[in-house]
Image 1 (cartoon, helix red, strand yellow):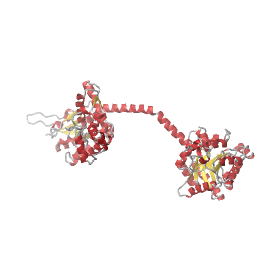
Image 2 (spheres, rainbow, N blue to C red; image 1 turned 135 degrees about the vertical axis):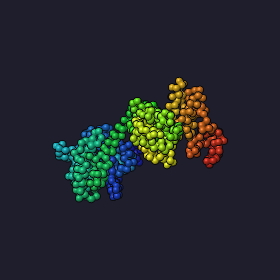
Image 3 (tube, rainbow, N blue to C red; image 1 turned 180 degrees about the horizontal axis):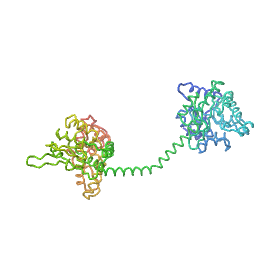
Image 4 (cartoon, rainbow, N blue to C red; image 1 turned 90 degrees about the vertical axis):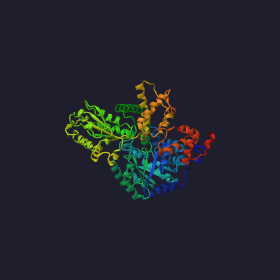
Length: 611
């Protein structure tokens, strides 16, 4: 099929203007007016692209205006009033070739009546033959004022001539739309029997070249209400529309329309220029700023890496980010801290991070053993007969940060003494209850969750209550696998520093194995695996074959709950070719076959034909 734009003069591609065009157009617009919660919207534009977009957006009709074309050329709408060229020829040139073939709704031709050399009848003949069934008076004298407007009207080339053009168009069966600005002009248009009267509130104020408006939204609404009441007093069938001035958004249009009882709205600058300016500015700025944004991202990543090195807490997962935010808050607080998490999650590292962030002068981080459940090593003991008294860490290091691991191992008496230290800073020595003052910080750890410690009777309720405000939970590695690549890189960097070894990186084949393993021993196990792989690797890349058996099996296994999805994803990646899938997963074909059968996967597939 031929492109209608390529043959704009092809009669098959043009909309004709028969004698009943006016009746059809008006009936269509009146039907929309009669629908509940419906607003007529006209788009005053100047390009085929704008016409297509407006139709897709639901415009009820289109106005092809010289102002729309000038806006697309970068000029403000007010330039449409200047004698830059023959306006009707200008509009015919683009509207006939671009807008008529593409518009799916009625198109009003913006007709000029200014030129005294042109007969109104001759101009209407040309417009109708071009395929237009509707016309509007644009450019219009209503935007002129003062002596110039008076002289234009006296010469017979002003608003009255425009009404004559609209009356003549109606006799030809064309629908008509009159631009007006004053109540007097609106009444004259209503008496002329114009189908649509568009109350223009002035040039739009939006965008970079918008004009100033002397009307507020409230003033515009009240003024339009008065004008529309006068129009309907003359003709109930006339459609009353709004345009311009302070209205630059749908919300503002609704506000003014609701008060004035307008039938609809015409958007010119607000539909093509204002959104286009904003959109092009934002998109261009986005493309332009990519380089700057990348530099900023790089800078932020360097800052993040600095924080990671400072606190030795590696990761960017949401859970780790929250923990990093809490480090500073806990460091500045005197609260006792309880760190819980499975074995190997890094509880000691977090304790050190909190201690270092506190920057307490002269303070050391001292580990306190709970092998003695009585807490004698913490609180000290009175001298036995003929013996010497024993100083506890609270007395020996009164300003240190004491790290008490596995707090649940302390007996009830020791836990009660610990509460006294947390609440008052005073400790009691075992045996004689001799008292001393501790001015340092307590950090406690446990491999059990806080709720389990309390409900299971591992620690007394009062201690659980005192430790709850400063509680930090370290998640398992399997629950934050997005941090695994960062952790792997961190451990390999440490290996290079400690052993002056070559630079090593983890290959994607190894990452596939590492990311599907359950990591029961968490970060500690990951470090051990990478250290072993680094010894086995002779090149610069740690691959899957360099990894030691994980979990005591010949191949790494995913978390049990995820195994079905793990296998299905691998089969789909390799189009159900069992050999390739088994190699990808690091398991034998027999093992894969058994798992496929267990999970009711299809065993005979087309993929097998290519193995």
